[in-house]
Length: 156
Image (cartoon, rainbow, N blue to C red; front, side, top):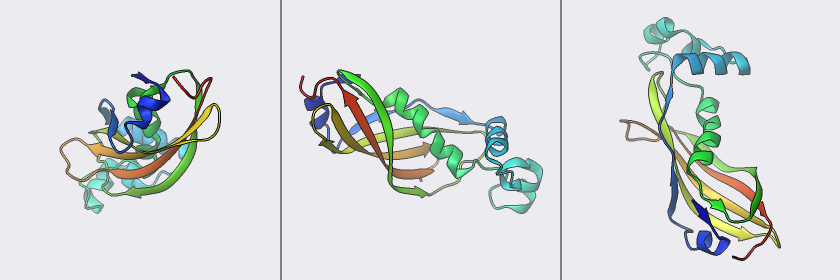
């Protein structure tokens, strides 16, 4: 969905995106563990994780779950008309609330909390992000995510 800055401003306080589901399987978890050198057994060894943890098997790394926010944003967030690029500006808050078991599906739900004009050609947006786990009441994580959008014109 493409919106003008004014249309986006009118959505402050509202849900602005919901991504598709993605399955977090053991292959993804193991690849992430090897890439990040975090090969703790709770992520990498299904038999040991089943025997020695309360999770019943392996769980995704919290940072793997968080890293999927980029995929969810590309799928779900509206694009500002005239946008030339967007950058990750950081986080004001991240909380990991529930582990993501291997084989579970997750998705991203976004609300637009604030939109601040930063002069001609830039807006700073703060999104509330909840990464939901299919069939689980508690989200895997919640975050306040900042993005900076650059574009050709501020007005429509």
